[in-house]
Amino acid sequence: MYADRIKNLPPYLFAGIDKAKQEARARGVDVIDLSVGDPDLPTPDHIVQALKRAVDDSSNHQYPSYEGKLAFRKAVADWYKKTFDVDLDPEDEVLTLIGSKEGIAHAPLAFINPGDLALVPDPAYPVYRTATAFAGGEPVVMPLLKENGFLPDLDAIPAEIARRAKIMFLNYPNNPIGATASRKFFEELVDFARDNGIIIMHDNPYSEIYFDGNRSSSLLEVDGAKDVAVEFHSLSKTYNMTGWRIGSVVGDADVIAGIGKIKSNIDSGTFGAVQDAGIVALNSPREVVDEIRQVYQQRIDILYRALRDIGLELERPRATLYLWAWVGGSSIDYAAELLERTGIVATPGVGFGEHGEGYIRFSITRETKRVEEAARRLEKMKTRRIRATETGGN
Image (tube, rainbow, N blue to C red; front, top):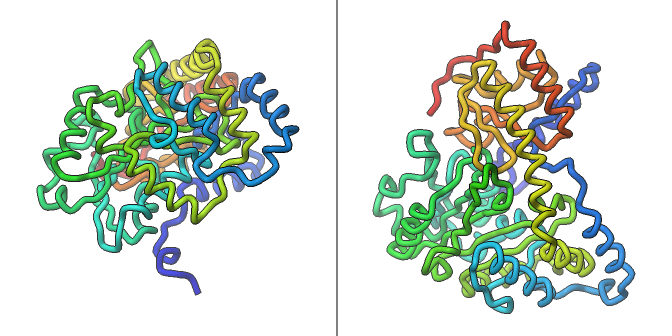
């Protein structure tokens, strides 16, 4: 009955986690869910109030434009200028999205023919690989290994594969690892893409969730990047607007046009009132994001110390909402035993790809008091450490 693309699709990572949580709660377990990066902090009130006003505007009750309101696209361009000093033409180099995931999932349809290659990182957000497969393309894995700073080794990509690849997905600051990329790496990446005729699709929703003053970069800060790349951004993590579903893709005008052609045949645009509220969000004082970041930094510190104290190997993340801990064996077994012993839900690294095996991802998107409670539970289990089934790893 189902098409092959559905039959061959692996179960979505978080669907299985949701089932495990439900079963634990049904047994009466007080579950602390540190698995999904969905901010618990509310959307700032001035943004909520802007939406309420915009809903009363009857002009927002009709179909929105496919590319998004020009006022919203100008706000995105202005935000990029003040945040990264990147100049964008809001008419040709900015496209509104119904959340960045939607844009990422649709983008390969504009550039991948059946049998074409796409370079995808591993471990990674599962949508990169799935979107490639939906377009009929073949994902080619770029391992993200600790010894390389969790960056892809561009020199290790065979020349023939590089020449055949149409697109490359990347994501820094990185989900699930929390790693960041240097300006030097981005420069090498742009040169690699130009030499091989590859379109870079850089997913950058965590740029503003950084710690200790380690400001994250935009790929588009590199000279020539707009000739070979687009960057996806979202208001979800920066302004705690995950449920609002609004984001953007910016960069190479021809690539933007291609994604726009797909979207105009699939959806009818983003609700105008949400775009109006998005404009207010993008024009927020820097203090708004600073306060959000401070809360996350406190939680990162609490959980990082707790995980190190029980003997897990991990680096303190420079950015994102995640801690990426090496457990040295089956990540699924470890996550299951962690839930059984402590009531803490974390994400098995293998769910992000084969090179995620041996790791567990913890998110800090729960109230600080719940993160503190998770730390106390981890402290109690220190003397009876969980042993993951040995399966190797990277």
